[in-house]
Length: 395
Image (cartoon, rainbow, N blue to C red; front, side, top):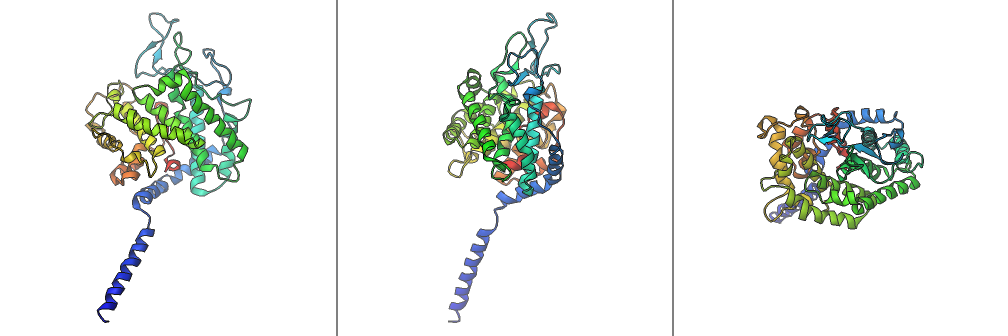
């Protein structure tokens, strides 16, 4: 008996310890997420305090005589098109990578502002539970999606127009990547008592209509079929909006697109994106496309269909993409190509791929690099290419 009791006791202790250990949070799931919340909390509450003071501004606030659309239609002009020195009043000409500061971009700025407001309010609500943030957000949701006087039409027929050439282009669809944090903000806040059901219903109907336009219109189909970051951003947007609307068939189709088209056709065997590397801003575009592809994995992955673990037959994976670009983020001087023609000094910032990847693969060094980078960029071009500025609402 003396020998049996200690053994039984040992078994009991082992069982108790196993049960206790199973209750402990997985550091991969909680540790880095919690660190990120602690790091960002002060910034979030400050941004939310600002957002609490903001009144809605939508596309109906201003217009351009160059727009072929109406009062409720989003309008923007292509960034890299300029007046022709040989024909100043004629059609604009392309100067890839060089942004024309005189183009009409009010609507894009309003949308970015809307995204900042909702992202801040949703983040603050997530960490405090205070419904005052939801009440404020509802005013902006109603202005953009419900109110007949101020709403935006659910299409992008007139985005990234080019004077004398196009009244709108498929490439303009990339402008609504800034509605993703709006959609995610709805998901974060929709169970709050302050969020009335009719407004939620109206918002989801708007996004449902926009999903249909993205999938059936000529510009939408063209963007879906693009070869580079435009297709990634098309899929990322549709995924975000479909998740809000609970459109499981659309989400399933996007998982297939990621596995069979986006990842295998855009990524090189070394983890780079050759089409982005060939641009005049290869560093910025490589960062942008990796952000978009990791965000797509973040939105679409499920326990049964985890895109973070997916690998093509020839070894391409999102983890390989992260591994390829990370050294150039940690030490920019290692970049082997020419510097970008514009905004070379403004990248990188706190890229979401660093945080999402760090949490997923428990990579502390990726997290530490993300933590040290700029979390509040002010340069418009950087903000334009940084749709995920409030990562806590995505984790």
